[in-house]
Figure (cartoon, rainbow, N blue to C red):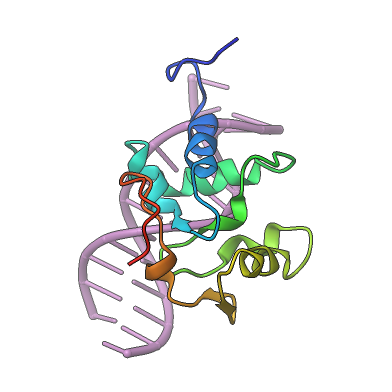
Length: 116
DNA sequence: TCTATGACTCCGG
DNA sequence: CCCGGAGCCATAG
């Protein structure tokens, strides 16, 4: 049935936020965790992503660590699949790190798609 | 029920 | 400025 926020698992909450990430934008685990009200559960966000395999609606490649580093790229099928996906959306990645990360950063709390 | 894990983050030296 | 260690919390076994 339709899952209420209370019945929904922490993972589903994470998915809900990640799905809201606009194309060409990225965010960090901590920002998502904070948006969920669990700023200290950043690691859980990553864990949720690990379980998001198979969910095409969850662009896990748009989620990186606070430094803009593609820490989770190693979990993707291809070695550079995550980087390729980001580059396909117009995001430039160098050395597993997003260029102008703060510019492409998307705050789930603000939920704005405007680019500085 | 308890222990271990981890795609993070923060703080101190 | 760079590096290391501890804290944190939800899920799985």
